[in-house]
Image (tube, rainbow, N blue to C red; front, side, top):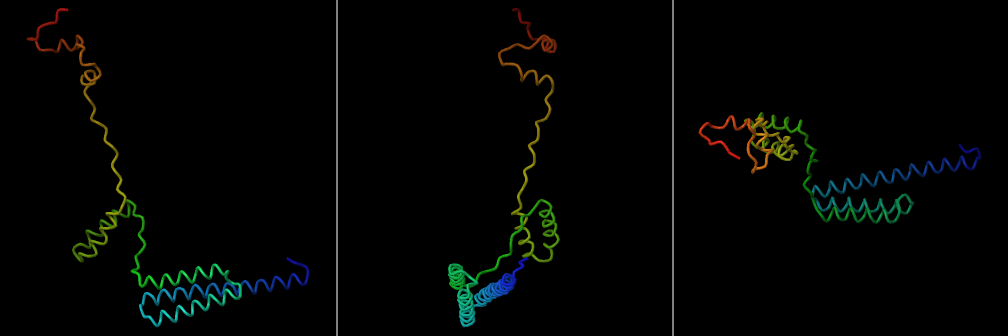
Length: 176
């Protein structure tokens, strides 16, 4: 804390100016929301009055140095784009659907299908957009021990003596 009288006074003045700047910025944000609401409403006269009020607030704040000139220009350009673009359809924010919420949404769909068909379609979209986890690849079935040995051998080699004993009796014995 300052201990000189002039510095104490300067701190009070700076605080008062800061609060005034905050009021300007807050009023400008509110005026912007009013312009957007007027654009959504579609009435040209309301849009014009809201735009005029918004621009005058920005000019006043710029004159008092509450806003920088470039910031003021950016805000004016932004509101002009909003007015030019016209009314927009408001979309709800899409939430990231997890496996848990996807199953809940699927349960809701089955409950509401009997009541209203349209609601079921909307909730099915959430289920469709849900990231689907692929099941882990299944391991192949365990092979029989004889099948493992046969698979391990190259094709040209003969079977060992144990396999020869299991061979049919009619097969001729190899004389080599």
